[in-house]
Length: 70
Image (tube, rainbow, N blue to C red; front, side, top):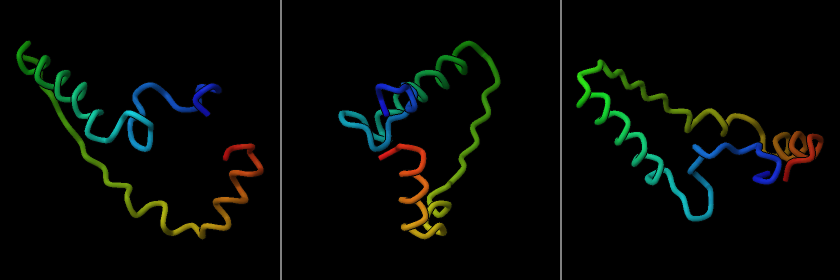
């Protein structure tokens, strides 16, 4: 999937050598830079952690196989 560029460079979760925490570094740098420049910054947090446990596992697997994704 990496070779097909399905996953962008900003994706950190579930990537070897990266984590959700490593994604916080560029985020924090951007927010602090904008604040230092006197610009307004809004941060919205959306929690999708329960969004994917409502689809049965076998349907997810079947769908991914149809699209050629592992």
